[in-house]
Length: 214
Image (cartoon, rainbow, N blue to C red; front, top):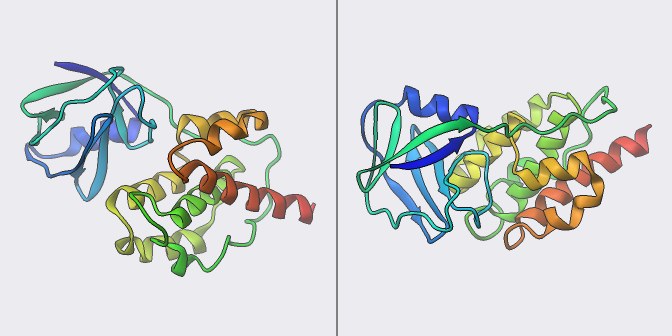
């Protein structure tokens, strides 16, 4: 048995998942990703980025899983259960100043989805930052949300799931820390190969637009 912590929606998703096998879509020393109900669900080590769609193990590595299944709301990797011991908050902190309307989109949203390399294409990361900072400001972005959702099939399963997380105001710890304390920008920018820089760029585009309109 491996004890894990889980974001609220991940815990709820597992409880609602019928018993049975689920596909392993990515394996590495620090993270394993499976597909559950059309979403990417991760299992991450202490060294991996704690994405808001992942179970957190508190270990230096994760099982080199060949198979995965869900039983009674519990994910199993190679037959070993990952038991949720606590729920972790992944919501973006609120900005002190609320916005009256959304900032201009960070580009042609339809063209941005899926543009870039890797498991999380760069433009998806930009969109994640832009969306999440709007949730921090308490502002809905229905037109951008609709454009993103209409093109999720163009990107990776992990990136599509993270875009959905951003639309729900769910973020990685480094993004939450930066929203609470802007001096933490370097730590956010250092996340992943380019993911942190992309999220920071998207959030700053929205913030700069709002400051210019004030």
